[in-house]
Length: 247
Image (spheres, one colour):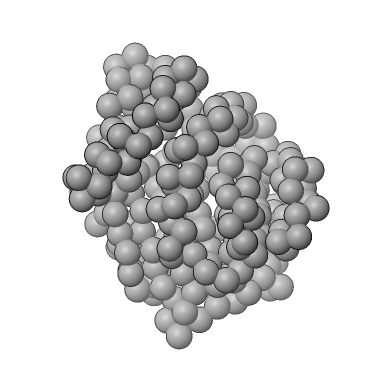
C-alpha cells in the first residue's frame, strides 16, 4: 500500500494534538458550524483521526462514512462510533494510491460531500489527492477542505505534524480549479489563532500546542468568533474552500 512520504503508522505528535483538540469542544463546534452549510447528503470525512468532527456530523443527522489512512485511528473510530445508526462505515483510503480508481472502485461517485479538514497539507502530491477526491463525488457534489494558511507561518508545529506546505486563498482556488472543481465558497478561519501559532511555534519553537493555552482559547470562543466576523474572514490561521463537481 502506498502512502504519503511523511506517513508513519505511529503518530505520537498527531495523536496528542488530536486528543488536546478533543477537549476544545467550542472550537470544534465553530469549525463544524463553518463548514456545515456546504455539506449535504452522504458525507465522506477524509482523515477523521479520533473523530473530533465525526461526532458532530453524526450528532447533526448526517449520513457519514469516516476514514483514515492509519489503522489505529480506524480502530478507534469503529470502537467509539461503530454502533451509530448514521455511520455507514469506517474505511481506510489513500488519496494518492497509484491504482486509486481500481482499489477504490466501490467508492467512486458514491458521496455527496467529501470533507478533508487538515489533511491536504500532509500530502506531497496535493493535486493528485484533490483529483482523487473528485472521483469519489457524485455529479454536483461538494469537496470541502480546510488547510493551514500562509507559508510565512510555517514553523516547528508544521514540521512535527508532517505538513508539506501552507496555503493562501489563491493557491487553494488554483488547486481546486486545476482539478475541475468550481469554487463556490472561500474564506479564512481563526484570526486570533495566528498569534499563538507564531509565538509558540516560531518564537518558542514548541513541539505541541500547549494544553492550558488551548483551553483558554476555547473558553474565549464567542469573542474569537466575533473577531473573525468583524474582519470579514479576510485572513486567518487556516483557509477554507468549497468546490463543486460539474453535473
